[in-house]
Image 1 (cartoon, rainbow, N blue to C red):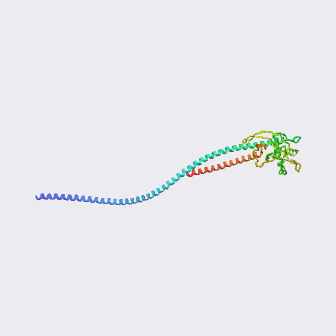
Image 2: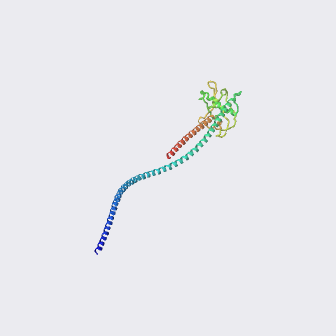
Image 3: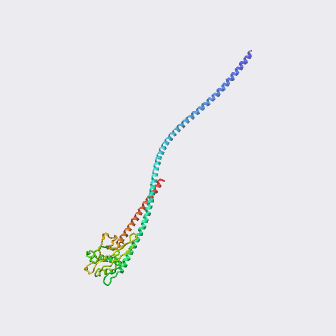
Length: 328
């Protein structure tokens, strides 16, 4: 009986030892696990510290980036304002450019009109110069054709009468001593009539023979009237000519010569004459000369205006180019 109990006890002891060994092994394994967990905890703590440092760095970078974002947002707002102002200025420049284009087109139209006017004025001046040359040639031919008759009378043609008036004016203006000695008395057969004398380019075209013939005339003769039509200029209408006035012989001067004098109206010099005065305005050299001078002045003014407009166009084009470059 005892041996069996001992055996049982021995078996139980063995089982207890086995369990103790097992528990020891478990304790060792648990200790190993605890040490490993401690190592992992330490590593985790280190990683935690690293993460916290990284988080702080990230927070700092985030703060910096937020500040930069705020500054950039402010800059963007300023840029938006600048862009809005630029858009407004661009719209204004567009409007100004459109108005400038309209003005430019109007100025081009004005230039074309001025060119047409200039062409017309040049044509008028050429016609006036041709008419003046024609009248000069006509007066010269009349001076050459006019010859004294046997009784001292003048020829009765209308052209001779017209030249007679110019030759009388020639004798008046070529005698300085007698230019202030006009008499108010006229013969009863001729009567008192008012005409005009024009000391212009036609005065120098009179020949000395006509002057001497006028000075050697014994008495004034009444010439028959001759009505004729004379062509007017391109800008004037035709006018008829009535009986021209006869020169009245002045009393003998100290040198024995005589002088034929007309009454002149210097205030209305260069204007169309009436039928009573007897000289058509388009044959008056002073009128033609003044007309030619005025036309030349008009042409010069038009040329000056065209030059000013060209300068304005050049400056406007330069300003538009500079504005385009600045906008770009």
